[in-house]
Length: 118
Image (cartoon, rainbow, N blue to C red; front, top):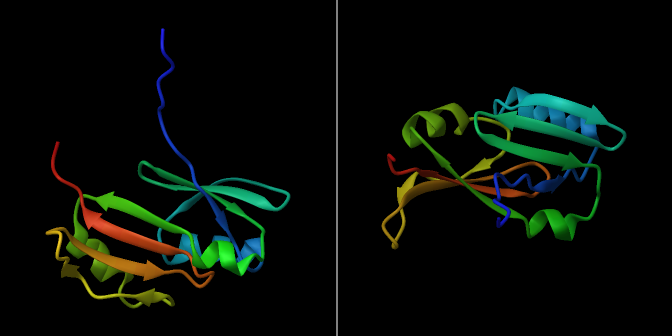
Protein backbone atom coordinates (compact mmCIF):
# COMPACT_ATOMS: atom_id res chain seq x y z
CA UNK A 1 0.00 0.00 0.00
CA UNK A 2 1.28 3.43 -0.94
CA UNK A 3 1.88 5.87 1.98
CA UNK A 4 -0.60 8.73 2.27
CA UNK A 5 0.43 12.27 3.14
CA UNK A 6 -1.78 13.78 5.86
CA UNK A 7 -0.41 17.23 6.58
CA UNK A 8 2.45 19.65 6.20
CA UNK A 9 3.91 21.76 8.99
CA UNK A 10 6.29 24.44 7.69
CA UNK A 11 9.27 25.52 9.74
CA UNK A 12 9.19 29.31 10.18
CA UNK A 13 12.30 31.27 11.27
CA UNK A 14 11.77 33.63 14.20
CA UNK A 15 14.46 36.20 13.25
CA UNK A 16 14.37 37.19 16.91
CA UNK A 17 13.51 35.53 20.16
CA UNK A 18 11.16 32.61 20.39
CA UNK A 19 9.17 34.41 23.11
CA UNK A 20 8.58 37.44 20.85
CA UNK A 21 7.50 35.24 17.95
CA UNK A 22 5.17 33.19 20.12
CA UNK A 23 3.65 36.39 21.45
CA UNK A 24 3.03 37.73 17.92
CA UNK A 25 1.50 34.52 16.56
CA UNK A 26 -0.64 33.91 19.67
CA UNK A 27 -1.77 37.46 20.48
CA UNK A 28 -2.17 38.85 16.98
CA UNK A 29 -2.74 35.89 14.63
CA UNK A 30 -4.80 33.73 17.01
CA UNK A 31 -2.55 30.67 17.09
CA UNK A 32 -2.39 28.42 20.16
CA UNK A 33 0.96 27.21 21.47
CA UNK A 34 0.87 23.42 21.06
CA UNK A 35 4.32 22.62 22.41
CA UNK A 36 7.60 24.38 23.17
CA UNK A 37 11.17 23.12 23.40
CA UNK A 38 14.69 24.46 23.26
CA UNK A 39 14.77 26.86 20.30
CA UNK A 40 11.54 25.63 18.74
CA UNK A 41 7.78 25.64 19.26
CA UNK A 42 4.70 24.29 17.54
CA UNK A 43 1.65 26.48 17.06
CA UNK A 44 -1.74 25.86 15.51
CA UNK A 45 -4.98 27.52 14.54
CA UNK A 46 -7.86 25.39 13.33
CA UNK A 47 -6.34 22.97 10.78
CA UNK A 48 -3.06 24.87 10.25
CA UNK A 49 0.14 24.06 12.17
CA UNK A 50 3.50 25.83 12.05
CA UNK A 51 6.82 25.16 13.75
CA UNK A 52 8.66 28.30 14.87
CA UNK A 53 12.44 27.84 14.82
CA UNK A 54 14.91 30.21 16.45
CA UNK A 55 16.98 31.30 13.48
CA UNK A 56 18.23 34.77 12.55
CA UNK A 57 18.72 34.05 8.84
CA UNK A 58 16.88 37.08 7.45
CA UNK A 59 17.29 35.78 3.90
CA UNK A 60 15.30 32.66 4.82
CA UNK A 61 12.53 34.73 6.42
CA UNK A 62 12.36 37.27 3.59
CA UNK A 63 11.98 34.47 1.05
CA UNK A 64 9.47 32.35 2.98
CA UNK A 65 5.88 32.60 1.80
CA UNK A 66 2.85 30.54 2.75
CA UNK A 67 -0.65 30.52 1.28
CA UNK A 68 -3.49 29.72 3.68
CA UNK A 69 -7.09 29.14 2.62
CA UNK A 70 -9.76 30.37 5.03
CA UNK A 71 -13.54 30.14 5.27
CA UNK A 72 -14.31 33.86 5.75
CA UNK A 73 -11.68 36.09 4.19
CA UNK A 74 -13.40 39.39 5.00
CA UNK A 75 -13.70 38.50 8.71
CA UNK A 76 -10.05 37.46 8.86
CA UNK A 77 -9.01 40.68 7.15
CA UNK A 78 -10.94 42.69 9.75
CA UNK A 79 -9.23 40.65 12.49
CA UNK A 80 -5.74 41.25 11.08
CA UNK A 81 -5.82 44.64 9.34
CA UNK A 82 -4.65 46.66 12.39
CA UNK A 83 -2.14 44.25 13.95
CA UNK A 84 1.57 45.20 14.16
CA UNK A 85 2.48 43.69 10.79
CA UNK A 86 2.43 44.86 7.18
CA UNK A 87 -1.05 43.94 6.01
CA UNK A 88 -1.80 44.50 2.35
CA UNK A 89 -5.18 45.35 0.85
CA UNK A 90 -7.96 42.82 0.46
CA UNK A 91 -8.33 42.57 -3.31
CA UNK A 92 -9.18 40.36 -6.23
CA UNK A 93 -6.00 39.42 -8.06
CA UNK A 94 -5.67 39.23 -11.87
CA UNK A 95 -5.93 35.43 -11.61
CA UNK A 96 -9.42 35.85 -10.10
CA UNK A 97 -8.78 34.94 -6.46
CA UNK A 98 -9.66 37.33 -3.62
CA UNK A 99 -6.80 37.54 -1.10
CA UNK A 100 -4.56 39.66 1.07
CA UNK A 101 -0.94 39.41 2.17
CA UNK A 102 0.55 39.86 5.63
CA UNK A 103 4.26 40.29 6.32
CA UNK A 104 5.08 39.21 9.88
CA UNK A 105 7.68 41.16 11.89
CA UNK A 106 10.21 38.42 11.05
CA UNK A 107 9.76 39.09 7.30
CA UNK A 108 7.78 35.91 6.56
CA UNK A 109 4.90 36.45 4.12
CA UNK A 110 1.46 34.91 4.51
CA UNK A 111 -1.11 35.01 1.72
CA UNK A 112 -4.69 34.45 2.87
CA UNK A 113 -7.43 33.57 0.39
CA UNK A 114 -11.06 32.48 0.41
CA UNK A 115 -11.16 28.70 0.26
CA UNK A 116 -13.84 27.27 -1.99
CA UNK A 117 -16.60 25.34 -0.22
CA UNK A 118 -16.13 21.57 -0.44
